[in-house]
Amino acid sequence: MTVRIQPIADINLRANQALIGELGVVDTIRFLNQFRAGSGDYTVERESLFRDMTAREIIAEIKSRRTEGI
Image 1 (tube, rainbow, N blue to C red):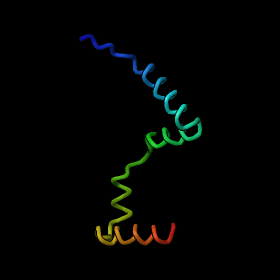
Image 2 (image 1 turned 180 degrees about the vertical axis):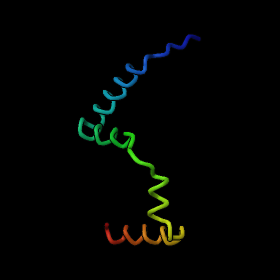
Image 3 (image 1 turned 90 degrees about the vertical axis):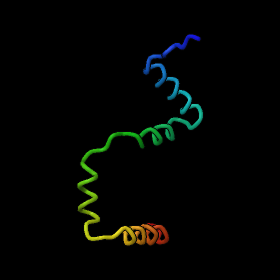
Image 4 (image 1 turned 60 degrees about the vertical axis):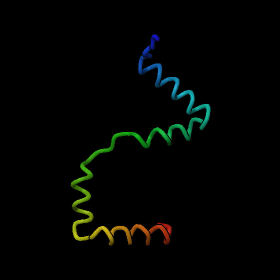
């Protein structure tokens, strides 16, 4: 059995065409933007944000914000 390995550019083109065909241009862009590399160091930020909170307190705050619609 012979397997043809396609260039990544070809795969990307086909994937984009499939997404655009299924989702449309705007939703394809919204979907792909989820995977862009961010900036900063979340580990450091997390330590600063949640330094004085327990896991239970963090979970309670998340649940509270969900019910408040924030």
